[in-house]
Image (cartoon, rainbow, N blue to C red; front, top):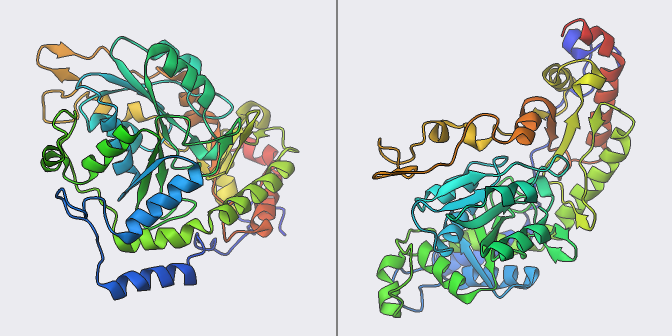
Length: 429
């Protein structure tokens, strides 16, 4: 292998593209889908108060399977995790203008689900080690208008779920978990996604298992389960015939999962543990080898927790490396390995929050008539997440099937090659 950096004209460590992400879709899924196609019933739903209100055979089967796997009483399937988040937020009974505390370091849908119910997202800062929301910051954000905490088990690591549960109970709040990236992660003997009143799972195509698009909401609360079932299926015309005329936030949507997607999910669930174990094994190998580089800190795992490594997120020390993170990442990518700087921009920096207007042109829901929310989205509001985004976080997705130890070894070789050429890179900084 050439010792000259590929960024400077040398031979790269890896030339071929990475294999396409695979969730092992095969004969099990084919059999399930073929059964649906032959039945001619591609959806089992009807938006009326009938025996079809809860969906078809495959939809109800995948809901039972998820409830059994996570040890909860109810699972509600929908057509995306975004839809599941919306249903969960609505089920809290949040009023327009009330606040829900969440993480700024995640996909935008987490916060958007709050806006969907005309409520106000409040962003807590994150922990430096796990990248999940910091319980101390959460508690500092609580006001008389706070309705719930919506935590995110980011990158595959559980939040400080027991601490957040205690804070929620202390202040009479609900706790929701966005567990899209952390299926089978655990914290002190509890599965991530089951400590809050509702936990959200994702079946999006790039998650650990997939149905193309899809989501599941888990809960032990029968009232919240019913609320989410109504929300996904035109609840405004179904609640009345059910005799449930007092439910808040009952404008419903069509968030229904198809029988085909549910069929795929039934096959995929049999592979969840195997796919998760692959991620954990590759991540353990990568962590072991990256410890020799003093300018990189591998992902931390909090005591009593298991990490499932949806993404492998490191911290880069610019002072120890002597070059900016951006230059280091460019050099790695030139060697043919996969790395992303910073993950996502903190959500509150997006225009919808900076302009404080989500609906129409009059600032709704941040401004409602003569009332205006005091919540601030100024830069610097969450210093830890801004530092991670701007200078420290480096993310790779190589710890996933069908990648193997070969891809891990190549990543480490690329890091080592860049390290041996740091002096030359410092001259470019």
